[in-house]
Length: 57
Ligand code: FES
Image 1 (cartoon, protein in one colour):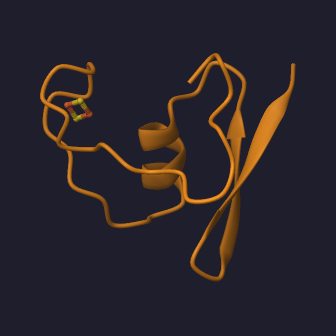
Image 2 (cartoon, protein in one colour):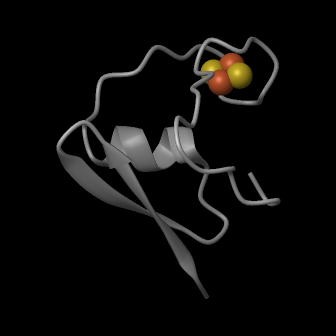
Image 3 (cartoon, protein in one colour):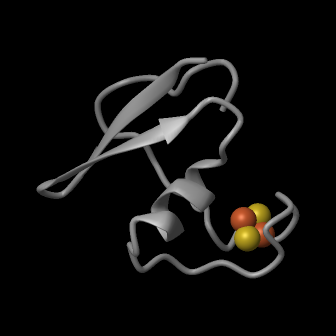
């Protein structure tokens, strides 16, 4: 299994294969708005500033 490293501010977290970015952020206790957790409401939408997200994202 592979993981993707993500830098948010001064924090670096790992998003494991099969794990959503939202779940990784919540696991690391990063405050992010969310509601449905199913990809419908877009409350948790974030933007990558310097690299393209992986195809699996
Ligand atoms: S919480 Fe992410 S799309 Fe709804």
